[in-house]
Image (cartoon, rainbow, N blue to C red; front, side, top):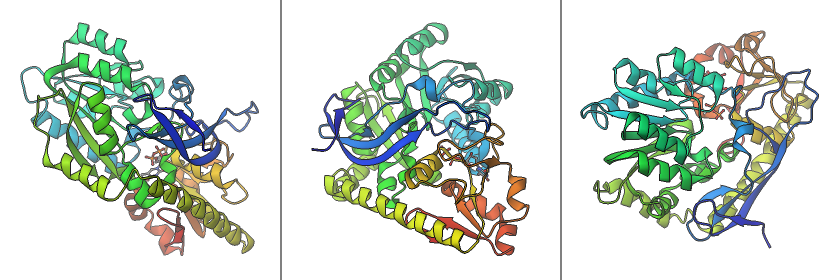
Amino acid sequence: MPNQSTCRVCAGTVTEFLDLGQQPLSDAFRLPEDTSAEFTYRLAVGACADCAMVQLMEEVPREKMFHQDYPYLSQGSAVMREHFRALAERFLSTELAGEDPLVVELGCNDGTMLRTVAAAGVRHLGVEPSGAVADLAAEAGVRVRKDFFEESTALSIRDQDGPADLVYAANTFCHIPYVDSILRGVVALLKPGGAFVFEDPYLGDIVEQTSFDQIYDEHFFLFSATSVDAMARRHGLELVDVERLPVHGGEVRYTLALPGARTPSAAVAALLAEEQARGLHDRAVLDGFADRVRAIRTDLLALLEDLKAKGERVVGYGATAKSATVTNLCGIGPDLVEFISDTTPAKQHRLAPGSGIPVRPPAAFADPHPGYALLFAWNHAAEIMAKEEAFREAGGKWILYVPDVHVV
Ligand code: TYD
């Protein structure tokens, strides 16, 4: 009998389809001198038989993940900076084109999206519980409230600022298990014609590319149009648009509105039909995904051990949250990957969670270049490979493990 849990959306039965083992907090980079016991939890994922929502079997308390020292920066990729700048411009000419508009962003991080809105003089509020990144947003001229967003937060924002034209969240909504409080808050906060827009990694891309490293503590839900549609209906909202995005290895931007306020776009029906046709939520498809994950684990470990036996140097590239899933599932430590190069100041000179692999600034990557780079930030491959031409010219090769283990 597989493990079961209770669905965080509809209280139905969630049945496990993949166990990724004991895992640390994916963004808890430790000081080398820290000898305290590392927090771990069992990372496993299942699907709800009633509403189809794919979700983690165990929940990590939010304060353990999102706090003063949360290190991730939205501004860490030039492609993502442009993605959010262009989206802010679009919002300014659509959702925020009315009289004295207001946008509220859940998990605004360093304010990468809202800084364009702030520069345009449009009313906005970023709600961000992670202190250090919220400070960066404030320094960039963004109005920030250091808080977790939930129903009570929404009500107090409505009291202070009035209703919102737009509630937006990028790579945040899927982090939050308590959807009922969030969606009650969104409904209370929105103007009658307003929209809740959020973008998160897409289950369809994760299954198709076997990008199992999208599964970690912070990614509590793996959304699809099917599961978001059911969740919206259940919580007094309607799915009115979907847009597939190429960023972060494949995401979908969902737009929810109050029922009847907007006509659902043809894209909604098309994506629902596509998910149905490919059997995205079928047990056999999810089991097939789990089998491919186990094959990647075997192949990646075999490749790294072979390279070690040949005396080759392998360095990790991008100390992503995703990399914690990979290293801790496969048992990859500093014996197989010398260090991980990363641009984020708060990760550097620390040890990657669980694996204990040191994180170093990018200068270490070229000093001298290794023979192989294991691309943990594969979702930024185009940007990184363009930037690291000197590595290729020096004979360096990239190791990728999505959609399968290969060297380029
Ligand atoms: P990302 O894949 O965006 O997210 P997550 O942590 O949620 O898996 O993380 C990218 C990481 O890679 C981030 O720590 C910054 C780092 N990075 C580099 O070191 N160099 C680069 O050129 C880019 C684009 C990112």
